[in-house]
Length: 248
Image (cartoon, rainbow, N blue to C red; front, side, top):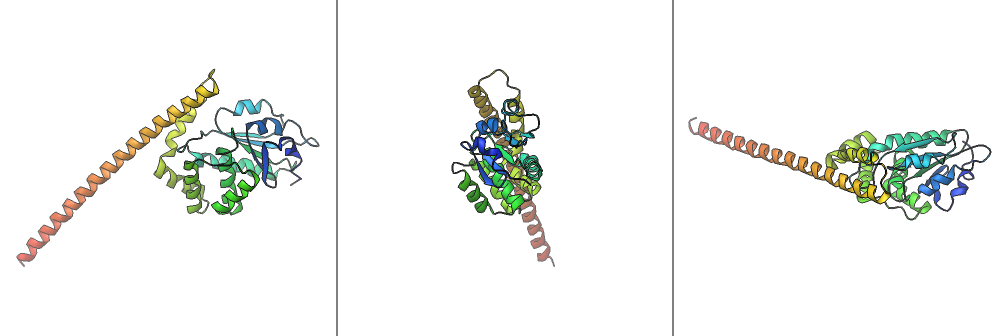
């Protein structure tokens, strides 16, 4: 692995190096970080967000590896679902002989991309959540994963960094995968302003959350009915046993 720091120097004002070769920043950093290579090298870019991929890609040189994972910044977005692809992109960039490193970004470099970096430190560097948060915050103090992403990170810690198990546990708790449709619909919105798209994303996510809540309530109602029926059967069995004892 070569030297990483000089490649990202062009974006020092809007991105920071968390660990050697791994940078965290905002969308403006992504648009400038790879525009000037060093000795012909270019960094890799990981876009963690929705609606930014094409815009960022248009600014990158052909040799720059660009990976996009779609997710929106809501408490119930399926952030764990995009982590496997994110981890592969980071690992590939850090293993690259050109030594360009990897810049992970979302729109502001505060929630989505920060969560991806923190999760990578936990799963791939063996850090605890507290250690990963502190390491990332020391480099970029403004990070603040949203409350749902923090639940996801705690779940990842509970499962020992096992993404598959963490996602299963987290989805059972939050039904986060139900917002996948929000990402898809959001990607279909063309010719609208960023504010209009953001509002539409919120509306779709809220609708998905409402449907997930309704399904959860249905399951809980069914579970309560089954519990009640089980209690009735148990009481009936006890009554039968008492009656049998009286005749013995």
